[in-house]
Amino acid sequence: MGTRQIVGPVLIWLLVAAIIGALTEVPPWSAELSQTMAVEPWIAVGQIVSPIIMIILLVTYLGMVIRAWVIQENLPFIRLIFGGLTTLVIMIISFVLQNTYGKPRPCHLEEFGSTCPADTSFAYPSSFTVIAFALAVGLAYAVPWTAYLVFPLAILESVASVLAGEQFPHDVVAGAALGGLGAIGLLYMFIKVQTKMAEQLTARRAQPSTTD
Image (cartoon, rainbow, N blue to C red):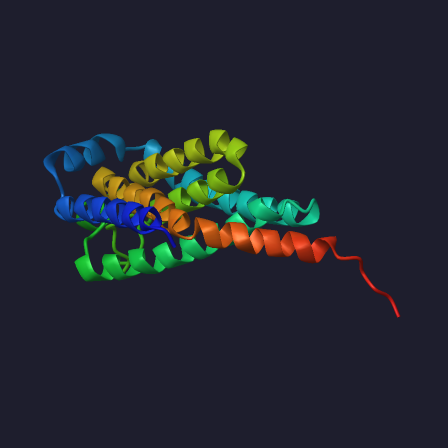
């Protein structure tokens, strides 16, 4: 593993850590923007749109994995597998951070007249935003043309979470940094491993099958 493959990801993760560390308290702009955005009828819209977008992203990701395998696009397939594993790792990091900081959601602090996640479900960083941006990076990395679809969806997911009153704007900014930049750092670190595994898969698939 080359020096650049270590230094680059380390710098990216230091940037992620700096962003998350700088936004641990609710900034005034975030509180004001939350109060402006989380109002009816947008609260109901956000609550509907947010989970739908997550389903679309997950189905799209799974569909691209199956597609790459079936048409034997081995490098995109391996990259998608690594992207999925990267998303899982970042989800775990996000869960640890949420429970470490224990920051309440806007709907925990103010009555919005709508459903709200339990008090034990913390806001910072936004888990849906983390997942959405990690999946978007994984898809765009493996299948570049999907970037035109998945990044707007990830941004819309972030906005929907704020509209629903479930996240402060700074929660989704931190989530986007952790999910997006964190995924870039991890995927870049193992780029040579991915290429080698894809070459091995291609060689195995090229071998003629034997029948008894």
